[in-house]
Length: 161
Image 1: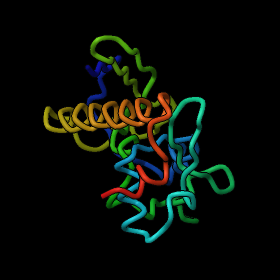
Image 2: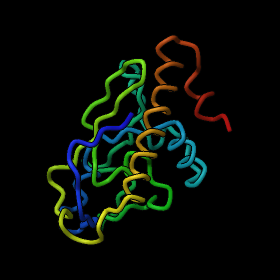
Image 3: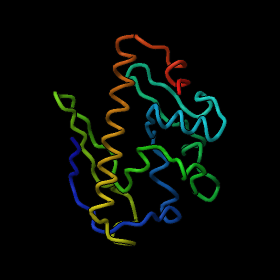
Image 4: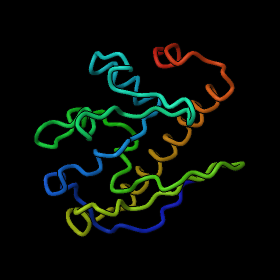
């Protein structure tokens, strides 16, 4: 289940104003994200992702405090196949509660200058955010299940088609 703490009526990514502040976080990846980036960029997953064994989570590597795939003009070089967490914008994950049905909490990113600008976030946009959040949640549950029990080799999992 996805819960959004606060509605955003209008939003436009103003990455030039904030110098892509959302790309300067330790952004998590899913198995799907890693496979897609590897395939499209022709990279081994270890070239752009780190695995946190304690949390059983994948994260984008950074270069000078920003996403590895951010260019000098603060543009995303993998925008066409950006990670699920990036597709949740203008929201960020504020928490995940594990229960019979996991609950993910999303909230607007505080420092985003794009609020109140651009198109209205209609029902279709919000449906896509909820769909991507649900996919993200399921992908990370899969990763946690596989590695908390020590069932899988990470390289095998990330290199499967």
